[in-house]
Amino acid sequence: MEIGILTNVVCNVSLREALAYFRSLGITMVEIGCGGTPGIHHCNPEILLHDEEKFQAFKSDIEESGLKISAFSCHGNPVHPTKDIAARYDGIIRNAILMAEKMNVDTICCFSGCPGDHDGAKYPNWVTGVWPFDYVAILDYQWNQRLIPYWSETARFAKEHGVNKIALEMHPGFAVYNPKTLLRLREACGDVIGANFDPSHLIWQGIDCATAIQNLKGCIYHFHAKDTQINEAAMNKNGFFSPTGVFGDADNSFHFRIPGNGTDSTLWKKMITALGEIDYDGVISIEHEDNSRSQDEGVRKTVEFLSSIIIKETRTNCWWKESIRQYQRTFLPEPNRGKEGVTQ
Image 1 (tube, one colour):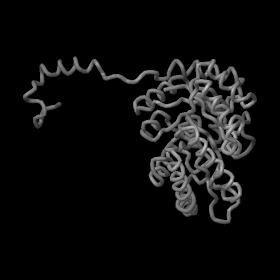
Image 2: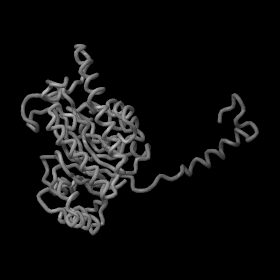
Image 3: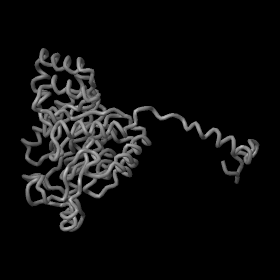
Image 4: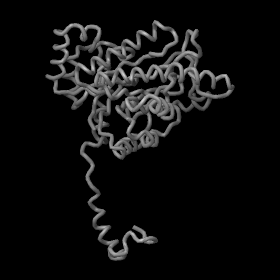
């Protein structure tokens, strides 16, 4: 595993300065925003895909830094019911795919998006229940007429351009928000669809992240290092649904924190162990959105924390098992091994 970072945490400095800063901290990979909520501070595909001189300067900055790109990120809602908004985000995703192709990167990170509830809708409709039964009809429309057709076509486009991993962040408010919905879309659209596993959005839904990782074996293409602190007083009053107020208010049911500062370190160690058990050896990418910490302090403390728990070496064979096998042979002679009724 390698420590990476979503570069927009220092969107106030140039790409070259950001890369030098990250390298000084021991970070080895960068996740670069190229549209949507991650912004275009360090990568504007509308320019870089059409201006070869500026693209070569961008490429040189990356190469000279010694850092590798884990993914291009382009979060938004490409199935928004308002056609102009959907088209804008679809263009952002396609540009991210083309940037990844040009930089020989095989992964982009984004959201599934959320459609409206019918063709004439103006706003997305996030459905999380099947009662009253009206919601069943909405889900049928959203998945069969909007989500599956869109992501099947986008997966095809991505594969044509050498991008074999579309890592969807499971996020409430969008159609893919938990492991079950991620797997449903993957089954319908193929294995180009996978997860950008961000535990911060699963914790406040009450999902056990280590178990979710095990259930998503082979499907996790990217991982975000971000934690969540549950505001128990608010959660106990109203649960995690909080459609009133302003995002980030003190009385919200949860707040994003740097790893180990929302939950304890035990959960993070369990997640890293689970990732190792499913043979995930990719990036652990820092997404610093903890408003209780400065840019620098949050990043530095996260790097320090992750450095102490990530798996840095390839798993070896269980060398101790041979002595156990030898011991077993004294009770289980070779001629009897494998015979019916004999334990192996």
